[in-house]
Image (cartoon, rainbow, N blue to C red; front, top):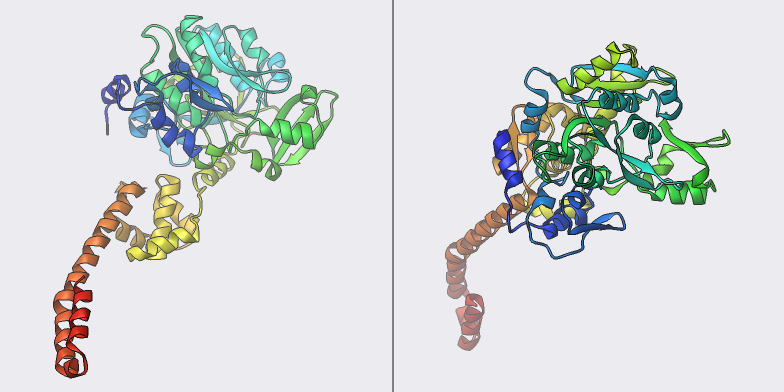
Length: 482
């Protein structure tokens, strides 16, 4: 495992051979961008067009945009050790945590405007009041629900943007202003599980200033998937004929997308009808509960009514949460259904993309079984998995999967660390297999020429030479040699 110093050195190093084109080729162009805004915030040469980062000036290839991207190298073990220390246990489905409870704000004003129990809003206001932070990177919206990055510096600022928007937003876009315009030293970040990786990298080594922009608190939101703004425009405004300026808030509950209209009317849409608007990179994310946050907050598993389910993870999160309880800012309950949270987490972790038949057909030439191909493809889709998860997805016994895994390991297609299996890069796998295939094929050609051809040619001459004109015989020999 790499050390904290090694990762900081990696982030600090200005590699003059990596630039925006690498970011585009490997992340943006592969529909893996999570729209966190980190690359735009730390690099003045990057802008945004059609909700995608774009290069607006010449690229010096300093590598910062690539290294701080939420979807590039993120050594989980090192960050786990740094954030949670060894004493905080880890659950495979939920990540590291110290306790899980239901909670809600004790402030009626917060409950009136915030989502569910208002815990995120309450904790942020409390963190500002006690001096843990001096600013929060958040998202607000205009009257048409277009998300906009926002820096909250006062409790009233936080209260003014309470509630969920349900559209992907570049929350870290405002990080540059927090550092250079407002000179904020201790920031909180609230974001989706996929965006937190970028925030943790910035926390490890702030790229814009040694004095300002240090991230002191990260609150993550449970997330099955998020939406593009098309959900608002096409579904709500055009299909349902609801002017967005008349919408009071959105919510998701019991497999329904709920629209609260200012006149007190509530419209409900089956969640299945919203899936076409899912943000593209959501299909690759396996983190439901924001496992690298200090505190994770959601609604699944909570009691009925205005409550949140809360996962307290790091010591930073624990100290803030306990202090808020002590000061009677929030109320807690042990009435939380952890099984429901784990069920949703498992559903997201086991989400895979099936390979087309043409892929199976091509790989079969490498003399590998369909079960081995499928096992490898599932690991590529999951990133890593243990036997139990593979058995659940493939619906076959662990013993049979173990056989496939051993065969794949012998071929160099996978690696295993403790109880988990990881795929080797397919580029290396296929390149090695093609090299082996060519070598074996060439060996077989030589064997045919040196062993079979010699005997058959002798047999042919012995039995057929009298029936073939000499010129024709020599022509046949010439064709075989060529």
